[in-house]
Length: 293
Image 1 (cartoon, helix red, strand yellow):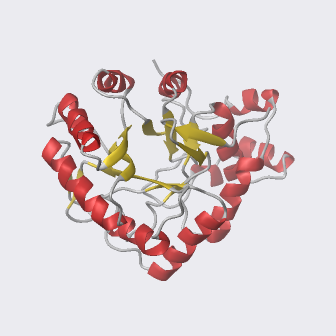
Image 2 (tube, one colour):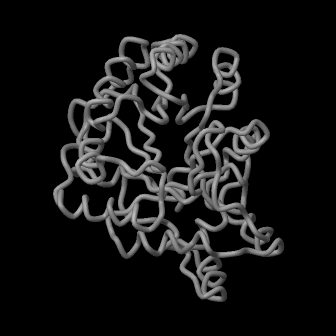
């Protein structure tokens, strides 16, 4: 069962379907402040690119700002095939205090800061980080559309979004990507994955190892004995099997695992070469949380 290695985002940029989520390259706890090993973070990001990964996910809230600044410090001037996706709409004041601001003015403020942090004139892919319950979604999406009209962003995406909200947004503007939590252990958003696939919308799977992306570790390394046995038969790690399952699940899925370890990064990238058979996919699809209505 072969799968495509790349996906063309909005018909204008082909990216490898194994990307990199940069969130962990921030201070701790709660991804607040600069990454403690700044030079190590730069080294890891450069290894990301050396390995052929050309999709990097970040956000203005990571740090805040520090993660975008690290990406720019490590990789600017950027390779021409590299796509950097960032997000706005979350204001983080401390490790324990944050609030959502999806207003057009708030998104403009965040976008303009991200432009400076990333040292670019236009952001390849800009996403609403979370839906702000205090702002009508139509206003947030219209604000993003205005930023695109002004040339500040090239493509519009939505993160942490429900299917009904996505369909509402599509009545206003074309949506290039959806970034939701999805993994072999958490399949609650299968309907959104399929909806996006039918419309050529990229689905960015975060938390692809099934754990809490705001905490270290993964449940794949805990009590998943059956999955571990499956991985051992394939001479692979449970992490690699989890990533390979996502890549096989739908051709529009871009997997964005995050790590602070070059060894784990290389292990993740190698997962893109794993080929799973149809019977193996059926077996793996029985793991974890199944689809909910």
